[in-house]
Structures are given as C-alpha cells and as structure tokens.
Image (cartoon, rainbow, N blue to C red; front, side, top):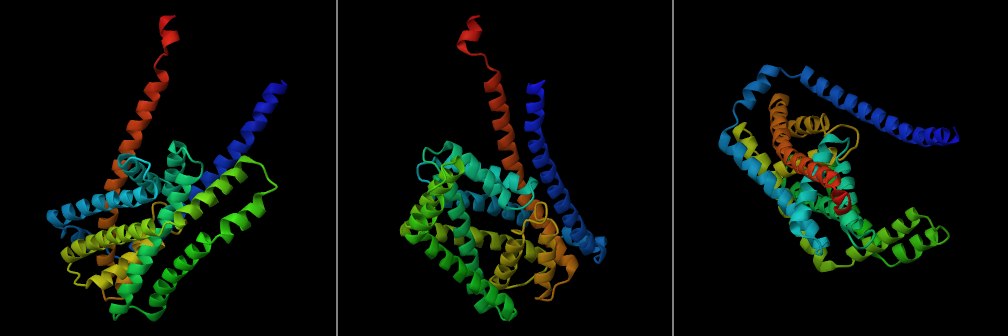
Length: 339
C-alpha cells in the first residue's frame, strides 16, 4: 500500500509538467491560428492561389537546394566549435533540430534538443551545450551584422528599424565581450555556486567554463561568423529567387531587411513553427516596399513549404534512429540467447 502511494506521489509531478506543457502548446497553437485567421480574413484566397501558381519549377528547385545547402553550412559552423565530433554527426543533429524546431513550440526548442543530444555524446560535461549556445549567438550576430550593413544601403527602411539592427549587432558584441571576460566564469559563477553541490550546479559551472573557453578562441569565432554570413546570404538568395517569380523586383539590401526581420520575429516563443509570425512579418515588411498582402503571403507560404523539406529530412533521420534503437533494445544478449 505504501509502495503504491509513493508511486502515485511520483507520478503527480510528472503529470503536472505534462499538463503545463500541453497547455502552453495549445495556447501557442491558438495564437498561431488567430494570427493566420486575421491575415487570411483580409486577403482573397483566390489571389494567393494565383500567385502560388506563378512559381516556376526551376526557382523552387534552386530554393530547395539553397535551403539544404545552408543547413549543411550551419553544421560546418558548429563543427568549428566542436572539432572533436564527426561532421556527419553534427549534420544529423542539425537536421533533427530542424524537425523539433517545427513540431515543438518556439524555434529555440530545436537548439535545446540539439544541445541535449550532443551533450550525451560529448566526453566533457557542458562543452557541447555551451557550443550550441555560442553557435546560436554567432548566427544571431551574423544576422544583425548583415542586416545592419544592408540598412545603410536601403533607402526605404525606417530609422527605428535601422537602429534596431545596428543596436542588435552592438548588443551581441557587448554581451560576448562580457561573457568572455575572466570575471564572468571565475568569479561570478563560482561565487554563486560555491556552496551548492547539486548536479545542476555542477552542470552550470561546467557550462560556464566551456562557454568562456569557446569565446576565447578568436580564430574560431571569426570563422564561425563568416560561415554565418554565408548561411544568411544563401537564405536571402532564396527570397530573391522566389520573389522574382512573383514579380518582386527588390535589391539585395531590401531582401536582406525582409529576411532578417522575419527571422527575428520567428524567434519569439509564442507560436507553433513560427506560423502567424512568419506571415505577419512578410506582410508588414514587404508593405514598406509597396507590395500587397496577397503577394507577401504567397511568398511566406512558399518559404514555409521549402523549410518543411529540411523538417522532413530531420524527421526521417529521427524515425530511423528510433527504429534502430528499438531493435537494439529488443535484440537478446549472449546469455539470454544461450538460455
């Protein structure tokens, strides 16, 4: 009787966590549905369908190749931080993270899964998790740097948006300098965790030391930022290719602003797979350059469709891994086979 009571007591916290996660997911799904409904309510569906039919197979194929190649570049960027890993393992983790970033609420969810999976394979505690965080920060800095540079050459970007990109780039640099200083890991973290001996405290200490170590490798940081610029340039090229088929004739600098704004909006953890945020970002930003909502929504739908290919690749890799693990656990050991 006591055993059953204790078992119920252990299950209650797990049920509470699952219930809260489900409530959050349903709330974000509702936000995505409301945002999409508001946008589609004001735009004729026939106009969107006509725009979607204007995409040529060559442009769609080129955008698809660019998308998959860009994620390959993203894996190389992470390889700069974790050279002890094999590239194919990092590429596998990158595509699987795209799957979870789509099916779980918020784009950061994919990074959490990637950090957890790589952390289990790493021999040094906190190193892979810190590398994933640094990789996200460097990618964000490359995005701000590219958009801030483009904003100087775009004549139709409002001053507040231009200042946002510039201050964002400066803010990431300042944050990196503070985090890489000796005061951050050796004094602040050690003083905070010196009296606590839990596993979480030990992980935070290892994470902070590894994070500090990654930020004090200037050659690696420069290489990762350059690869980040290549990644984002490929993503901008996708916008140009698909936009041309829709009759959008914008310079690269304007497309960079549109891409950067949408990408930053999708980081907000308030929707599922960025639905609603992506569409609203395209509609709002392309309106600055004189394009209608129907055209912007058509581009958004096309971009979402292209991104789903990487999601399908990641989901397929995850499914194959799950089947292989299930077969490995069911395979009898040598002793049981003899019996």
